[in-house]
Image (cartoon, rainbow over all chains, first blue to last red; front, side):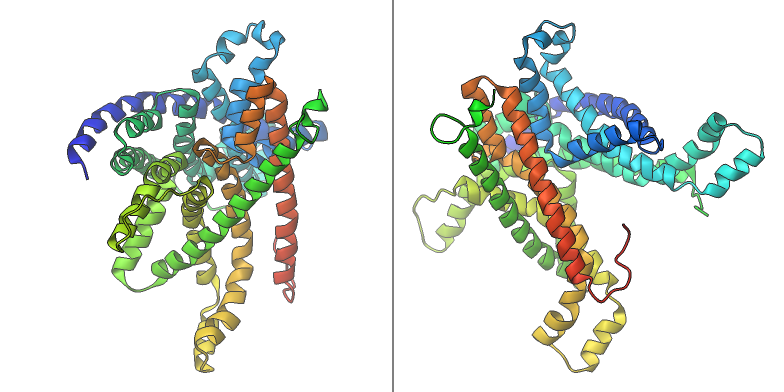
Length: 227
Length: 237
C-alpha cells in the first residue's frame, strides 16, 4: 500500500468533484422536469400520449447508458444537417452530450417513480378535494403533488445515488471528473488498488450525504397514510 | 444503407451477431457468479455472527455506492496483479494474465452479486418461519432441508428480483467494452470507426440490446409461471 501516493492523488481527484456535482445537479434538475412530463403523459389516459411515453421509457430502460452516450456523442454528429443546425455548438461539446444523455436517462427512470407516486394518492383525497370545490389544477398542485413528493422521495433518493454513479461514464467521452482523473492516475502510476480506495471513498461520501439529506427531507415532509 | 450489415468479410452483420452472443455469454456467466456470491453473502447477512454481517454489509454498501466503472478499472488494472500475488503464496512465480472475458465476468459478477445478495436475503426472509421449523421437526438436514424445502420456496420468491438483476447485469456488461472485450458495444464502436457510420451501428446496437431484453423477459416470465404452479394468485399483472 503506497500511502504517500494515496495522499497525493486525493488532492488531484477532489478537483474532479465540482464537475461531477455540476453535471449531476444540472441533469437531475432537467431530468425531473422531463420525468414529470413523461409521467403525466403516461397516466393521461390518451393513447396518443401514453404510448409514446411508454416506448420512450422502454427504450431508455432497455439499453445501456454508455450506448446512449455514444449514440448522442458520436452517432448524431454523423449527419451534416445536424452539424449545420443551430444545435451543433451544443452537440459537439462532450459536456453537453453528457448532460443531455444523463437528463434523458434519469427522466425515463424517474418518470416511473413519479407515476407510482401519483397513482398511490388515494382516490378519497381527490374526491374530498372535488367536494371542497377545488378545480383539477388546484387539486393537482395542492393535494396530489405534495403527497406524490412524499411517496416518491425514498425511491428518488436511490435514483440520485444512481445518477452520481452514472455520471462516472462521462469520463469515457474525455471529461475529467472523479473517475476520469482516477483513471489517468491509475495508468500513470499503475496503482489501481490505492486509487480505487481514494476515488471510491469520495463517491461513498457524496452518496452518504445524499442519503442523509433525503432522510432529512423525508422527516420534514412527514408520513402520509395512503388510505 | 443496409449493405454494411451483410454477412461474410464485406459486411458487419456476422460480427455484430457474434458481439451479441458474447454479450449474452458474459452476462450469463456474470449473473451465475453473482448469484453464487449472493447466496454466500445473503447467508452471511442472515447469520448471527457479527463479523460476517459486517463483511457482507460492507461489500453491498461499497458496490452500491461506487460507480461500476471504477470497479471494472480496479479489476482490469489490478486483477492480474492480485492473481499473481496469490499464486506467489503458493509458490508460482511466473507471469499470469487474465483475459478480458474472465476479468469482465469477475467485475460484473461482483457488481451483480451485491444486488443478488439483497434479492436472496429478502426471499429467504419471506419464507414462512413455520417452514424452517417444520423441516427441522421432520428431522431433515443438509440437502433434504435446504434442497427440498427451503430452496424451491426461495427460488420462487427470488425469481422476479433475479430477473431485474439480469437486466442490470446485461446493461453493465456494456462497460467492460472499455477493457477490450468484443461484445455488442465494442463491436459497434469498431464498426462505426471503420465505416464512418456511427449512427447506424449504434442504432443496430440499441436494437440488439432491446431484442435480448425482450427475449429474456419472456424466458423469465415462463420460469416464474413454472415456479408459481400450485399458487392460486400469480401476483400482480
